[in-house]
Length: 152
Length: 152
Image 1: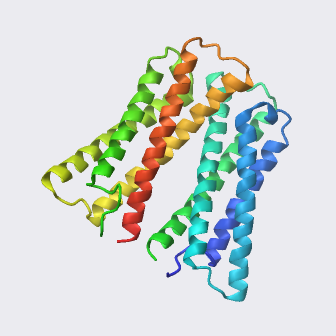
Image 2 (image 1 turned 45 degrees about the vertical axis):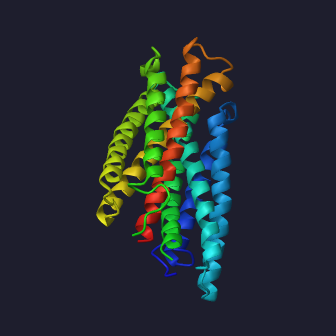
Image 3 (image 1 turned 135 degrees about the horizontal axis):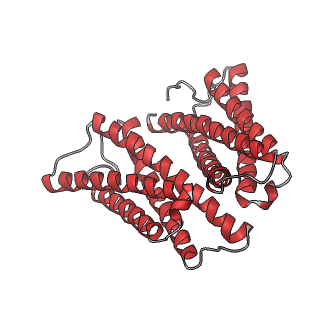
């Protein structure tokens, strides 16, 4: 099993994990500082999904760091299978949460012509944008992991 | 390049394409027969995305059928790469559209406590459910195609 650009235990893999973590944390921070998010199921789901993303990316970043420092490989087929499943689950949940929240945001800003939550409206938009960026980064990781598993 | 369960030119591949096509057509039929869908961006996006899904799945189903009747293989690397890209694009768009519409549906049914579109409310729910089923079927096809490409 040869490592790939962005695979487990590589510097680019670590950068991808840190990007996912940062965007997901930014998304939660932006959403959780609004006062009305708990009234909307999609926004609560976004926070839950980004929370899962943070935990997953943090654990994987730690493993990448451990692998880089100790110069040990993480290319065990069982380990890569685990990464594939985890990445696919988090990527799917992130895209679903970001899209559901984007649907609500577009409803308020475009379809209804106004957003009646005042200053919080911009925070919703920022949170959704960061969630999409986090999903994009996770989808790259998951494609790399799946390729590694299939091409071993 | 060995064919897989559900790969191009196999009977199960054809069944998967027909499932995607049927669910996507059902989703459009259920949504397009409501009178208010065009007021909501997410619902219009669902129709556009399911339309793309129908065209893609129909073309691929025709190719599978052609391959089965003529007993010719479709396992050309260039062709499989094209299938991978098309499947990933349609799967991502389908999940995003289904999730955005689900976000709106949950907003009306759960968060606001009622749906003021009368009999059409059930049609929205059916359309979203069928869109998720179509996405699930497409995601299986895309995983099979990606595996075939990586493992060649």
